[in-house]
Length: 343
Image 1 (cartoon, one colour):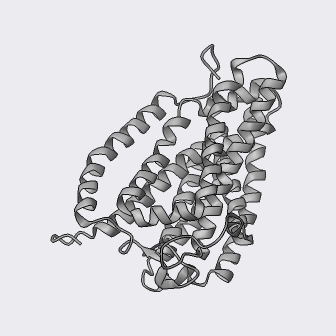
Image 2: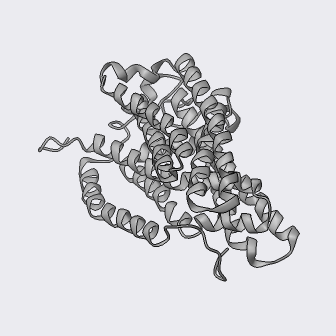
């Protein structure tokens, strides 16, 4: 804590959460569009789906890169431990994100049917796998990892694929698919838009079922999930607001307000990520071997001087990121229109 009373460790715990939230809300609909890609009827519709995210998908991933860089600089011990445990999973995620980008760029380079279908499948698989792996990571962080006294992961890749993380991974895929369907409803028109509206209802039903199931399983198998609620009772307000955001999604879609539905979906994701952070706090990585081996925002952090310099850089840089994001979305607002420069 600095002399003026500012807890820099807590500040960076919060800021990394903000960056992760920004990535989930913005790139979440990108990944969701990829998961829904094969539901399009023909080549024209698939091009429309790709071009709905075409101007923004790469900019959205800046949030993930920034979150990773901030974690490395602010909490290097947690970063190193995470890579020791999730190394193979991270490599799979990296490959999925690369193939997703390649599919976007290569799909329309040739007119051959087999060529486009191959990249359509690659786009779907890489988007769905990325969404799933993000959820698996969250599930493992909630239930804890076999971290020893040396801070290294003591298990194997398959130890990460237990039932609870797999459930959270499936839930995350459904959440991103719903987010993506709402985004497509906002960006399309005509017959395609009406069919996408049907996708939203099916996606919402799947999301709601998995949300309820995941909540029940979390409360039953992760006893510390609500431990901090006794110290921060105001967190219950976030729970209520998140539930209200979920309830407003079908209402907004029914009334024909896609922007409101998208905002509600984004607020749902932000609320869930906030509750995830509260459930972990002050831990960054929980050890299932012994709680004393867990890495917290205070035991895994860089020096106070480093955190202070980072805070100054963040104060200067974040407005640029927010400004860039706002300008891009403003420029490319409106319905998707295909031209010779489109994917």
